[in-house]
Image (cartoon, rainbow over all chains, first blue to last red; front, side, top):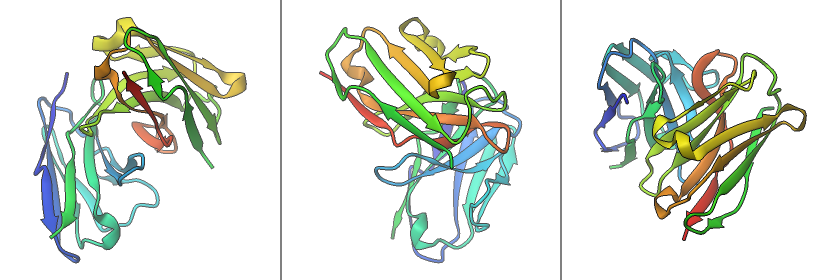
Length: 107
Length: 121
């Protein structure tokens, strides 16, 4: 199975901060990577696919980058609605796997 | 509007068989651009993909769980059914169904159900 390792596990930040979450794959997944946001008690919500393509309706303050094994999700200016947990997911190979999550909390 | 909704028992005993139903609306299970997956989230918040069913009824399973899982669908009723045998307390999780494909056509989950919490005890 392809392992995805996110860092950090928890990120403390303030409104307006630029924040970056990284996701490292255990093997080359080209750009077959997605990012999701999850809020407490809710299902995950797709933010990004193919590493850097924004899902329809997602604010442009979210951006994605990377290829191969190293990827990043960046929020350019943290908004109140962005405090949540973020997961990466690879769809290069079965079984599709997720990172362990990064919680973005208020500093 | 695309919706998915899971239903099934909240509590099952060890060794019992779990059956969950995902009822979808806003898209057809016969649309070749779409498929439906089952994903679970453990109490520690880890997400684990379990299985995916295509419009042609082809199913892919997580290899480590394949012997315990069966997924089928009833297109006319817009339902996807997950069966998991020999339930164990380690299977306690929130179970989601999610649509794969959507407008992007990517193998990503663009719509999710609300999830159903299953406790094995």
